[in-house]
Each structure stands twice: as structure tokens, then as C-alpha cells.
Image 1 (cartoon, rainbow, N blue to C red):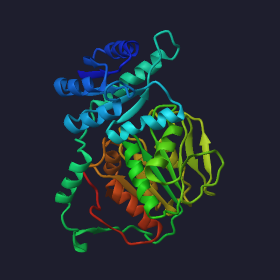
Image 2: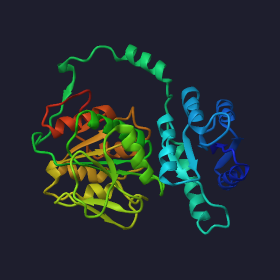
Image 3: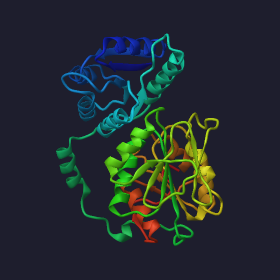
Image 4: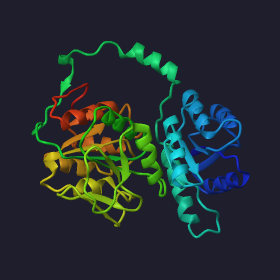
Length: 371
């Protein structure tokens, strides 16, 4: 049984969400909150498995409520948004910075032709998020003090593992990254590292998210990271020092001339765009010059194809278990022996810089985590 707290200030929308979620026999509504203060109080008192969160509310808004909940009683939070325009989508992503796992579009009412499909998608998302083990988000000042206490001295070089892969000095031409649940904040951290190091390779990304949010996500990601981010366009040549995000409803591929190829096709692993399609598209001649990264996410999207890229000469990296919100995709990649490196987001950003510039990197972990 999945216990859900519904947070929504509109009585009409609140009743709709309760109606939709309550229709599933495996979901139990344990409370409803009409503002952020009540949301924090009920989260602490009822200890739900999942919280659906509205953002525009009286007293304290959904951003602040999310932050307080993640600091006091960490709970998987699903933001339910009523708007998908670029400004609203970019604003909604601030909740991800506060600790929300995913943003979904609010289903239309029962009379709408898309009601059943959207309602079923919301139910699936809420139930799947209940399986995510979230961690406490400390307040900034407290986190800084904790980090200073726990970091300790930098390890000696002999205590670190050096990056050693075949063709380590091959000129790099491309980075491809796949991410799902928990990915937006991780992508922002990686791209901020690239911006800091004046990274000069093109980066092509697939991030699983609800339809309608991709353009707003690209805008938010650029603002959050300081690295240029744009929506990928069919036929364009990739330019170094920029990140390209696959748009809603299109699989993204890269050809041997470093051009973007967009196509509408069957969903893979339930997704379009899919990470698998992007990774599989890299031509054999380009694979030794490619760095492929698989980040946090549910399921197996991209894992088998990451192994194929590794076998084809690409350098392959997965996010470590400790920092990943969900370890499905990277965990499956490790099971398939698909990764050269298992790194934190910050280490991923630094390693991309080192690989692009043929610098022998030093990282805290090299190997097959979880094998």
C-alpha cells in the first residue's frame, strides 16, 4: 500500500487528485494540505510514502515546503504542475533544487479525452516514486559546516585510483549523457563543472521528463549551471562548448558528421526520447572519440547500449550509488560491466574535462561498484 499526502490549495484540483489517486486500490490518501505550512506539519505527523506537491500556495509556497520537508522528514515529492509554458516549467524546476524528485503535468478532468491516459501516468509515477530512498537535505549553513568537518585532508595520490582505459589519449569529439529520475540537479552540477573548466566538446543529453517541460528545463539548466544549453534541432551540426537537450517526443541521434538526427519512433523503455536510442546511434567510427555517461534513474534505459559503447572504444561513466536518487539505470549498467568509472557528479564533471584535454585524472573510485 502506497500512502500519499496530497498538497494543493485549489479545492477543485485537490478533489481531482484525490479522486484519481484514490481510484487505485494500492494507494491510500493519508491527508490533504491546502498550504505549505500544513503540508510540512502533515508530512511530519503522517509520514506518507509520497507527497504530491502544488507550488503556488498561501503562507509558504511549495518550494519552501519542499525544502523544509526534505530537511526534517525526507519524503519522495512529486510536483504536480498545471502549466507547461517555458516560464512556468523553469520556475517549477526550482523545486528540484529543493529536493523534489520529478515534475508531472496535472491530469485534465474526467470529461477530457486524455483524462484516463494522464491519470494512469500520474498513478504509475506516484507508486514508482514510493520506492525511491530519498536522503535528508541539510540547510546550507549546516551543510557547509558538516562538509568541512567530514571532508578531512585530501587523500594521497597513492590512495586514489587513476583513470586507465584503452586509448586514454584518443582525441575526444563528443559527450553523450542519459538521465532520468533525480537527473536535473545532477546535470546542473556536472554542467557547472564544465562551465568552470571552459569545456570545449559538444554534449548531447536525454533527460526523461513529462511532456511539455523540456524547453523550460533547458532554460533552467543553463541558468543553474552557467553552461550554454539549447534544444537539439534536426540536422544541425554540434558545436563545442554547448549542451543539446533532446526535445519532447523525438528520439535524438548523432551521425558521423556530428549532426543531430531527430526522429519520431516507438518508445523505448517507455520513453521518447530514450537514452538507449541516443547511445545506440553513435557510429562505430565515432565511438572511440566518445565519452558516455549514465546517471540516476529508474529502469534500464541506456544500460545495455552503454556496454556496447564501452566495447566500441568509448569511455563510459556511471553515477555512484550514494549520490543517485534512483540506482536503476546505473546499477544495471554495472551489472552488465558497462562502466569504466563510477563517480560522483562533481567527479564526472572534472573527469570530462580531464578526458577532453588528455589529462590523467585521479578519482576516488574506479571499478565495478556493486558487483
